[in-house]
Length: 76
Image (cartoon, rainbow, N blue to C red; front, top):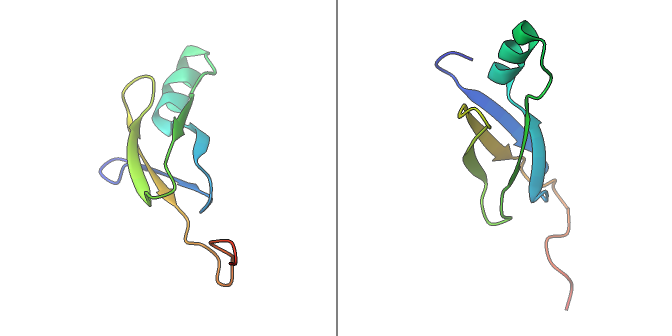
C-alpha cells in the first residue's frame, strides 16, 4: 500500500458502500480493536472518488465498468 494507496472497487450501479481501511486494520489488530470500517456515498455520475476513513487515511473508491448489454435507461 505504501506509495500506491488503498483502492476499493464498488459495483457500477452502487451509490453507497461500507469498506475496510487496511491501514486501520493493521493498527486495530495490534491494539486489540476491530473498528476499521467506514461508509461513504459515490453518486452515479462519478466513476471514482477519494474518501478518508475515520483516522484520516486516504482511500480511492472506483466504480466498475457497466457490463456489456446491461440496460442503462428505460425504453420509451
